[in-house]
Length: 520
Image (cartoon, rainbow, N blue to C red; front, side):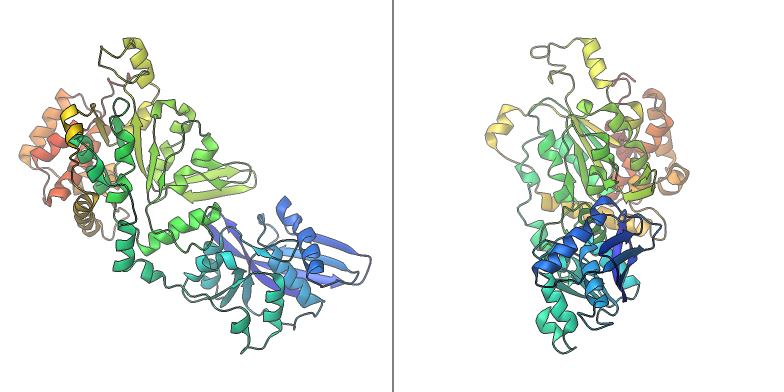
């Protein structure tokens, strides 16, 4: 007796179809599983056997062989429990032959027969729809997650008996046993959905007192997707400003949301019953984080913080306190907007298109150059600043120094512009960039490659003369020169100017990280 059931597996954030083949024959009782399986998949036979017994299905003594095809790809996770159980039921003729049809099954089984939540349902259902599968049965806790994919019917099951009754029922009765779960993803990104996200209690820039220069730098960074570094004493508002940057970024589009939700689903961090992630991610790891947790990795590759921050903000507070090896590992993801993790059994690629925002003190005690409060020596300051490598600084487009908030500003309690007003200008600048880069691989000014700088950041005669003076007087490197041009292009976009002007270049040069200041 033989059956084959559709299921799915993950490779990074991509999914592929798996055929769960079950053969049951007479002979000494045995349960074999093959198909390049991880430990948790091999343990499925114990969960499935006991779950079927505890719901009243006593299997006869027999020889059971389960193959997960394709057999040359590593299978991981617990989502194969349900398709294995369905395959055994069909092979034993406890459900009609062919009842599973072209339906895909995912789910972990508890020993009581409960169908438990699993990781990666969204990308697997998406791959199933592309493969022409018409129906999916997943854990009820994952049903809304899978139902956002159009062109495929999704049902949520709470236990194996529900699935068994569903397969045994006629076409007209199935909807009563396992109702279809319907979610219109477009509604989440309609005008009302967007307004709900923007007014969901996020921290607002109007709560920031003073620090106009840092606020302006944050606006420029958000408009052009530039990386930002803030340097200042404790309590100056660095973290406060960083946590408000997602609120001035445009809301996620549907396609971006599917990307973000897929990564979070693969990591197993999607909340029960959650459909799609509609807000920009904001990740702020502690400086004790390991390289594998930051970049991604471990024996079985998992997405790291840089992938969980995809399409959002990665905030590194106390930048010099991070391990230098971890910071230097950011270099390739910052350039390529993705990270590839290589292991003996293959390579896994995760997206990592994030905006890097960093904050740090100017010295170990935090109060340099205030000689009244700072007790650090000049060598100590230079050593502390030198913990951040030159290659990482080269990838930071804007650097701004914050000063302590003065008493009058603090006493008045008057904040600045609201996030809504800043976001409006950012969205207008983004629209200009979308039109400029239509049909190209670029999306933002921060993406422009060196070979295309002259095309998108061309200068007039006066501007060329200004840039020449800046290059000479500031002793700029080639990378710093190109960085200033990218930032100036974004400043011009915020003003709605078609051409880069001298004022834009001067402001962009103001945000230049000084290599001498860092001891490089």
